Length: 193
Image 1 (cartoon, helix red, strand yellow):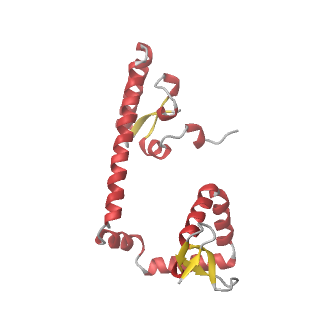
Image 2: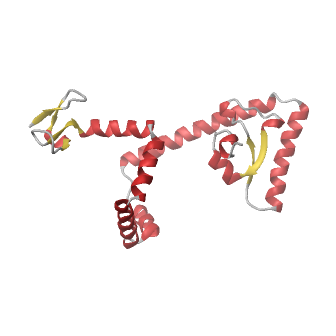
Image 3: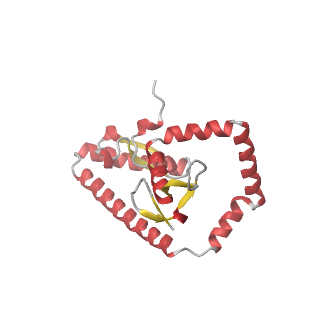
């Protein structure tokens, strides 16, 4: 049996429609793919509102009870270590393998382009600016030896956003922070007065 989706204007099988108490036939007027697309668009457009709604829900009595049930079910299943063990034993689907392969290729292309862009910026530096860049690299190595951990020479304004390798755009930061910052401006991570 077919039903017309009022969103995409196509005839779809009734199995692709969710239940609805208000409609005459007991089915929602949009098909499930249209409902999913609409929800994805809302999540992209209003992340703060969704986050606030979740916080309000989990602050309510019903939300607190739901959170307790979720935590109890998670603990009963063995927690994170059990979930990771199940994931490791489960074979990857073909779609997941293809997605990982696409991601690794895209990532390799991005880093190669980023590396070549940084190299071209370094070639355009004056002798004094290049000396400061070398000093920053040396400072990162010194901090690794003295403090421990990994340190990176980071661009305050990222190269991908038009930043240069001039001295006033360089900083030596912990590698973990630099990876977390990714290609965002450093100003996003500090409170403004």
